[in-house]
Length: 318
Image 1 (tube, rainbow, N blue to C red):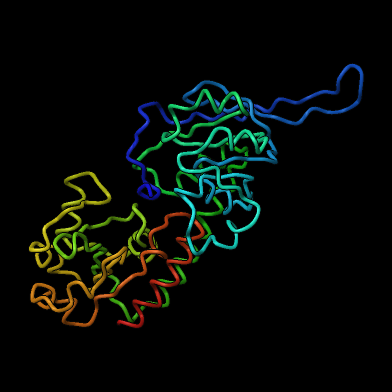
Image 2: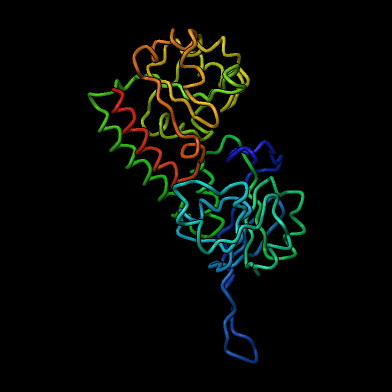
């Protein structure tokens, strides 16, 4: 399965410039039927005329944002991007998996009126554009899911939709911070790591790479341990992988809490090793294992659910 939600393929084009020009359709000369209302979106592939109220969207990417908009696509790449337990009820009915990589034949069979994609599908753009109006939103590693939500909302002529999601999260985060007041130091440092290579390596995560990072660092406003923050900043990255396990005490020296995303290897793989037992947060019973199947995902619905879960876990270990 492809790495979730932050693709390595970077489209070198400029960001989308969106036009709000709405083309009013008039009745035909021989009948009174009205054409579907459309608007024009200016993209890296030129101007694209799309329906203002699409009914049959195929989302090769961003289907989870559409679901947060309460717009269920008829098809999506669920093979790569589906599977969040928090989206199970949304994805289980009414969305056809077009495959990963997507199958143009499967997409065409759904008779879409709009296809949404990102840079991962750039090479096949012309093929999809022949099926239905297609909008490619370039991947930008600096964008959060809420930045992408705003862009997608503007593309669809619903700029308020993306803003609403961010506001909703911020309100939820404020309530979560209030629950932690007096129980968790507001300057507490939290590390998010993954154990790899049968306990021989580990990875560190920032706020913009899933694993609950957005909820911890942007929602609860907790801090990163100094070494982790420096490493991510030095590499201008949100994930650094293949770090030797021997360096773990150095990276976690000032961590008040350690969140371990179990994606095949959890705390048990290190529990009996001296290198793990020397870490202050471990000594203080503040090493917390996260179910990778719950925290792997990085979309508006999953993030809100993760915020609730992490808040309760921190309270339990406070």
